[in-house]
Image (cartoon, rainbow, N blue to C red; front, side, top):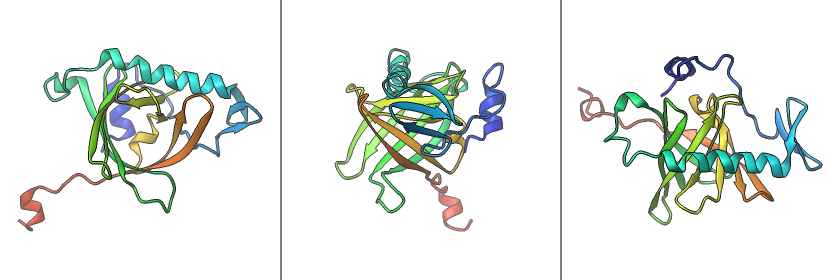
Length: 185
């Protein structure tokens, strides 16, 4: 698991204090505006467009494959199950990695359709907001804070264009145990 200390120390200049995005609590929508800690930061359309732009910015910066690129340039953030709510069954998974330049790459898998697609995005170093989209469609766009991605469970905001959004949940999956550990060796 990528800890906050590992992530912030890995990027030159670090991040300073972590920013946690808790959708519906410290970041919320009200009457056409978006607020963070009770301060208006954008209109709903502007906020969605920012996420769309962050996700699109990573598309041109994707490696052919992360495994074949310089491993020192990428940090795994983990594999997460995505759920539309606390009681909903998770049928979507994302595997995320981030480059030293703040580029996000990975894979989205839908276990119902058995379909896997690449994902791409970026992290805004000023706001610590991470956003990515799946495949070539560019929609939906998923976002959370880079600090949130160091937690085992975190809220996720999913934008369906600029007009609709939903709050989902991301839960970190445990890495598979090695054969010797599973056998008690």
